[in-house]
Amino acid sequence: MVRFGLLTSLLFSIENAWSSTDVSGQGTVLDAGSAFKLVLVILVTALILYALSSRARFKKQNKQLQNRLHLTQRKLDTSLAMLDRHLIYSRTDVNWVITQASSALARISGYSQDELIGAPLSLFRASDVPESYYTELRRQVIEDHHWSGALKHNTKSGDTYWVNIEIEPIFDTEGEIVGFTQVRHDITHQKRLEELWVTDQLTGLYNRHRIDELWAYEIKRSERYQEDLSIILIDLDYFKAVNDNYGHLVGDSLLYNFATLLKSLCRKVDIPGRWGGEEFIVLLPSTKLSDAVLVAEKIRQSVEEKDFPEVGKITASLGVSSFEAGMTEEQLFKLADDALYRSKHRGRNRVEVGFDDES
Image (cartoon, rainbow, N blue to C red; front, side, top):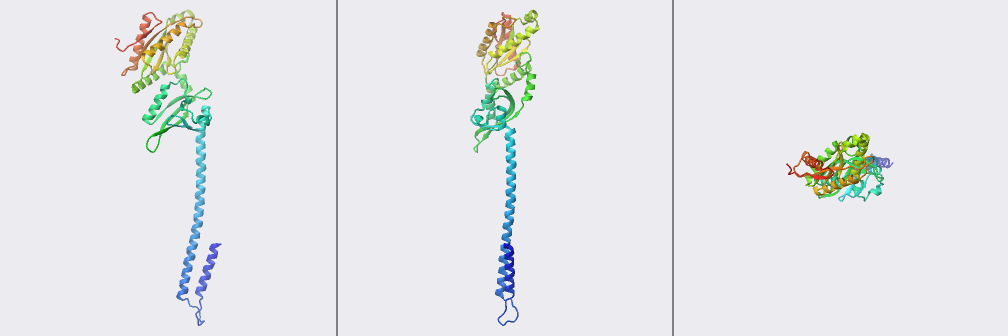
């Protein structure tokens, strides 16, 4: 309507200017003044029409832009909500205290998001995962700016679940680490299958395959950080006689009950396993030889004092050795195996130590 009125005014002005009558009353003459006014009116009106048209176009474009921004924001909100529901994510400060946690993490862990905020990341650590494992994890994140691997976590109710986790540091504008991000993927089902593969079915301890893996890992860790590592080899004395006198079912029961006792005697950092037959092994990360001997003696004495179902009293022989720089897994094992042989040769039911200067 405004543009229509301006157009009407323009036509009216043009008509008036064009129809100017001279003083003699003879015809119409467009003098210079009227021509100037006519041009001026046309220019001003054209500018006003252009401005109004541009304003209308701008409003339309602005509305379209706002609609697109609103749609983009809705899509972003939907995507973030989906990530929150499905991405097992957390963020911690430099002291590994949780500052942000997704609802997916809350759901799998059994904690509410409010309970997670302000809690230490160690809240999730399963009781049978050595603290040394987490110590190296933190070191590697700081040194290499990345860590990834499988971790077993505890839920609020005490159940366990497995995640594959990626951890990276967060930097400020000056390049200083101010926190860490943790992105997890639930691999519980996969790990349940793997546990069947790495677990000795009779005793529930790690089997030889898994012990070999952990042993290699602990040696690398000891070399990298110059930390102690010891092992204990354990052999149940006269086990063949148990099978011969009581049968293999009783022998299997003895192995199971001994494994249960061994697990109860080991510290959280220790890694017990069945090496084969009646022979067992314990890996002792961050443990020097003298402390390993104390652990071995505790195991020996506990076995000697226990009454096992149907069998009664038994004894065990033990060999202990400790890792030194440059030593291979085979060399470390031979020291403990030689010590175990000496224990058997010297009367059984005793702890012997293997030294690397033995011939």
